Image 1 (cartoon, helix red, strand yellow):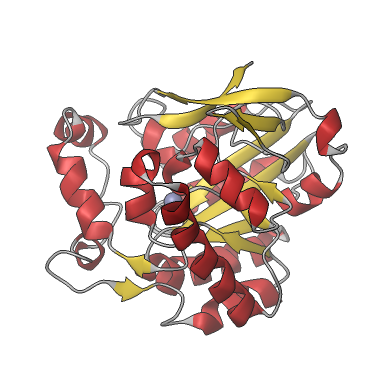
Image 2 (cartoon, protein in one colour):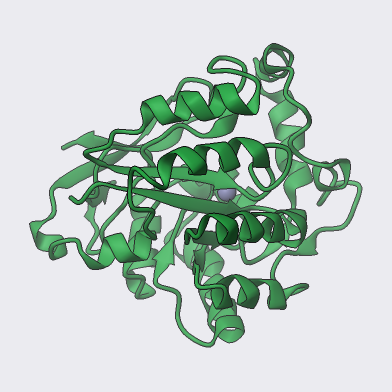
Length: 300
Ligand SMILES: [Zn+2]
């Protein structure tokens, strides 16, 4: 695996695509780097996720510890509860085309992010397909070609989701947290589409423990990057495209001269045939600083 740094941009909300994406586009243009964007194609029901987070043990303690500025504006926190859900892409398809036209890679981050995140393990294969078929069709209608990359909302991944993403013709996925690209297997199903996992922690997992200021956080990330390896960093339009833009700016200033910044699609195109990739299991696991379980790469 060639050493590289890859930016995986998750777009989870209407306001993230509307306000955060242009800020990140400007930042990436200034640094001359391209990123891989994964967009939730359906309704923004973030308010449900926020209500759920508040019910989770330890959530308030974490907020108080980090003293983080609110990562989401109030209108986003209420989407799907007090305020109506908004379609993230259908209400602003030109934004998706703008990201594509700027030379970035664009892929699919599910349809209803909240439903996938909260309930994937309980969804039948038909219910998973009912999420991903319309997301894939809408992408094709807006961009004019089928998507190549898929990234699971909230790093939730099951045998059913592996199978549906395979069936829909995606060429690679980024569903899990792990160390190296691999051929994923879950619930007795061995996928035929390679997985490129996120290798670095996300900002919300480390705020407060690794630093508070943009400079402290950028410095911490810089020490976690392994120069001889593939490093995949997941960021969010609502976070690094919002209050933490300066942190990412400083991090990119350090990284771009040390490692090639590449898209996940470019990395996927250079992987060996999937039958020659190492097989690894996908299992729910807990990560420091993150509530709930996420899909992790495990030796199988
Ligand atoms: Zn997401």
